Length: 149
Image (cartoon, rainbow, N blue to C red; front, side, top):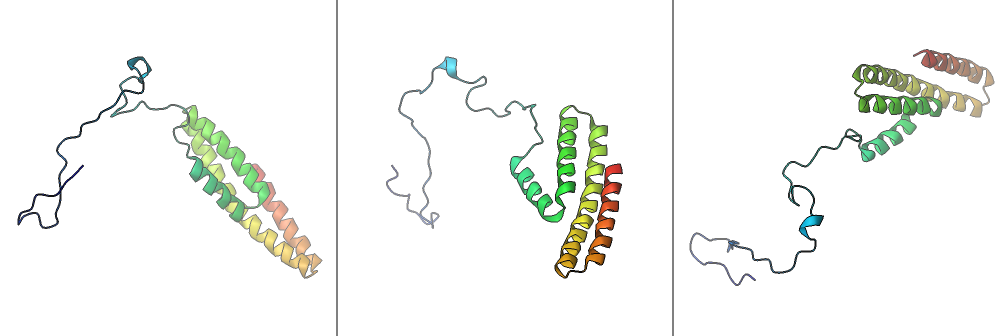
């Protein structure tokens, strides 16, 4: 309980200071239940299980992928991302670098395919089936190029 501040010309904002804290009670756990190093750990142990994985960032990236890339390419990218995460977990950084480059190429390709898919849908709505057929051929060529990458 803080009763009142010390009044003087230097304490313009009526501040108070806490000098000591007295805790009264009983410990909840015994010493045998205490984690190693006590409850206050200045340097907690490093976890080895997927230290680079952030679920919130993965969810946002997943939504972003669905918005900007066609579904077929998005599924390929997800498979490659899982393989890349596994390579990082195995500390195979050369493989992870190759997979990252493949993912980047597929993202660019997927954006182009998504744009062509939108144009194809617009052509079908206008009943311009010749244009839709040409766009479909372009999409198939891009997807074949993506399978090689």
